[in-house]
Image (tube, rainbow, N blue to C red; front, top):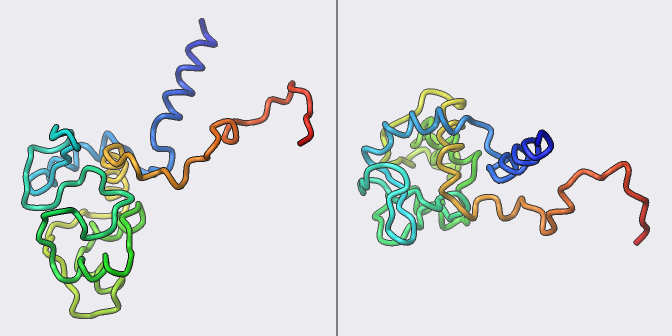
Length: 166
């Protein structure tokens, strides 16, 4: 029985986004402030986070998506310009952006006049990482590039297994 519990714990942990540095539970609490403008609505139309607000773009699937590209949303000029460079939302860009949106675009674009329509800022990187850890669960393609093609390749070698040669 104990080995089944250990196996379950390992598998449950493996299913979670291993690359998220923050705490998803804390991020969910912080997202309550974000849901005034944002929600995450899946492809079937189900609200999976937030209250269905549309002031900001839908955050479902945002990680791994090109910046400023959610269909039908009217973005500001700076975020559209950043998207045209091929920038894709990932943890680093999100964490920097939500701490100071306008400064993020100024830095990314090298344009002192760049600005953001989003005025809200989180207080520090740790809080931003928590929000990322919460939202990344609603981005099915976020870790596709980081995931090994063969799950066995990610498993540690069994020291008791016989050696094999290719």
